Amino acid sequence: MDYSYFQNFYCTLEIDGHKLIPKNIIICTIREWIFDILPRIEISLFDDGYLTEVFPIKDNSVLSISFGVNPDDSNIKFADFDIVDKVIDNTQSNKSQIVSLTGILKTNNCFFPIKTKSYKNQTSIQVLEKIGKEIGLKVNKNPNIYTTDLMTWLQIGCNDFEFIKHILKRSYIQDDILFAYADINSNFNLNSFISSINSLSKTARYNVQNFNEYVFKDDIERNTIWYKSFNTVNYTNSFNRNFGYGIRGSYYDFDKKNNIELSKNLFPLSENSYNEHPNETVKNDQFPIYTKNIFKDYYKAISQNKYLKGFFNYSVLLDINAITDVKLFDKVDLIIESLMTTERDEVNSGEYIVGGIIHSFGASTLYRKQISLHRNGYNTPKLL
Figure (cartoon, rainbow, N blue to C red):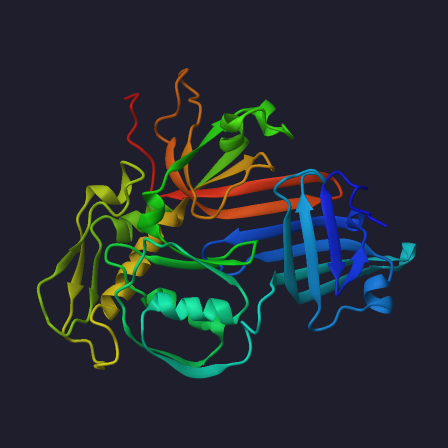
């Protein structure tokens, strides 16, 4: 029997091939995040002993889920998750219990075994492509990005997940940064900061009526991100004071050439913040480690990549129409209505990058979708 029609959202749910009733879901949250590498699910549901006495959850159990607004949703998501954590809250008075599970997108041995191996004379992108295929994901590489970090990459005493993070800290694109992350569709995306900034924008507009629509009338409505509420989180203040306004870092360079100034245009999506001050990285000939294995800009890459991640400290979280198709690293032109005039809020409106997507639904909620938008700050006020 198909139980997926018996709740106020569409969902099918299985653990190890055993079907569960989606109506028993108390809350389910699925997060896609560009820094997390793999999407994560957190789900709590009522259980009468089915998951502990009839088909108990094992160490290698897999949770399979599909979800959407309704059965006719053209953008229904489906994913498998390896269950990595289980908490059972017993409520014996009414012969039921609450089972809370945490899962990570299913892969082939991404966290085990521990490996010691080398990738000889390859770039970071080439290594990441190989790892992505080995762990069972579909590699989706932006054709416009190339890294200049040819060397022998050493995976020493770590799993593939740890090695991916190791590579991303050291990969090098001049005045840019490489990202590698999986999405809910099991795509392993290889993308870069600048290539996303240079892409076409989707428009996000406030409209409660369109936010609640289940079917859009035309392409304009379908391609617009309709939202009903938002909140802003700004982590850039201390970062700017101590790191962003005229950064001065150091790295080792074998050639001992002059200092290199980072481009002032690395953060083009807002008028304030880093753009106002020169940013300099200083070559340092006192670094104690010397090896011919690493590529020329190895230490510069570490410094530059850390700096460029500061772009994502400023964020706006939007509640959007759940049938909207939006992807990680989409560029969005956000239009926020002014509280003081009939025009748009010029300080906080503008272009952002999608850094995270949150899907949630449960017993007392509809299917809800949120996106986390990021840029390096706000615009100069025009009302003064």
